[in-house]
Image (cartoon, rainbow, N blue to C red):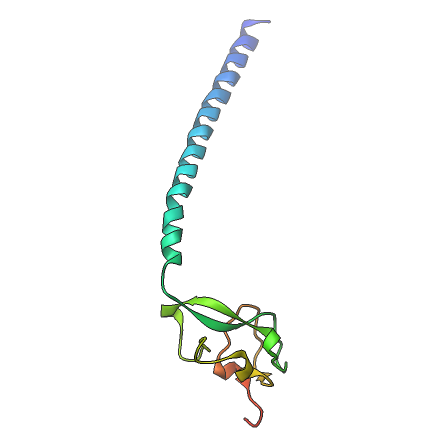
Length: 121
């Protein structure tokens, strides 16, 4: 081996070692940041929630609503608006036989204005 090959090999090994060192430190920092973020997520889950009625599956316009199309989902209390159907104030049976006025996607909150009850215009 000549001197040029040896120097190139030493340089390549040095560059690989420096890269491995920086990658190890970066991964350790990411892991520490992720572990510190976990308590913040637990705090977010501790906020007060209400259960509202949401579509369990996609409901196209004109679909007759049945109780099995619906489910109760937790919703942040400060995000609940007047039109949402809140557990304790409404039931799935209140919407039985209603027709979907505009397309509802799975998990989307159901509002009184998104469905038409029999006898309404």
